[in-house]
Amino acid sequence: MAALAVVAAAGLLVDDRVLVGAPIWLKPFKFAVSFAVYGLTMAWMLSRLATPSRTARWAAHTVVVAGLAEMAIITGQTIRGRRSHFNTETPLDRGLFATMGVTIAVLWVATLVIAVLLFRARPGDRAATWAIRLGLLIALAGLLLGGLMVTPTPDQEAAGALRTALGAHSVGVPDGGPAMPLTGWNTTGGDLRIPHFVGMHALQALPLFLYGIEALAGRFIRLRDERVRLRLVLVAAGGAAALLALLTWQALRGQALIHPDGATLGALAALAAATAAGTYGALRRPARAVGNRTGHGTSAPPAATSGEIPRSPDAAQESPA
Image (cartoon, rainbow, N blue to C red):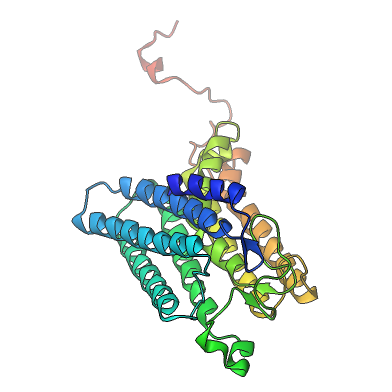
């Protein structure tokens, strides 16, 4: 995938063809980079299993084969100057698009198997374990959201265009309109690629978030407590899941990411407030610890009675003099 990303980057420089409003080699480039990061992350997670598993090995091989098949079709269609996604114009195009659907379904099931194995194991301390587990769950949800793109759009149903196209990235507007640089996300309507992207990359975001916390633990003593790190991971995972739901809701209403309405901004503000409150609660020192610092609620021995001088353990062996 890394090598293919280099090839696709070269294609962006030397091939000036445009397909659906974007440079024709942009899709292979983005998919190759995404698959490379996905593969590295899955390999890292599998390496944390204490005991090598035949099931894990076969699931990993399945992910590799499915990814290679997907990229072979995308790259082949790019060379032909044809759309790889949603293209049903010819029997070959329909067959390739259907095959891509099968490969992604197989990849999803293989990732689910790996997630189950990591839920049964403990690939680190509690914070690391749950960063991996919850990252996988959110990524599986993000992958599933890709299925929303292959449903016929109202325009396709009304025009009877299902023989040439089935599904779209955009909601409320046709694909290929004004788009954000690099990502290609639509700027005039909803775009289902956004929640799909955010969900999938929770796979990397949560473990990286934990690494950031651990890096700061050298400066902030509070972060050295495993329970605090675990609570922060849970807050981050909850925030990521809520953000995924918010972005999906926004896209399905045909609203561009960069043009949110009042309802979207209100939901985002509520999410930010809830995340901030959760972070404060995760970092807040327990009442018992506060009591220990003030001298209350401790298990220290009672103070000496009036007129009594505390003695050391060796005092009984010392001479009266």
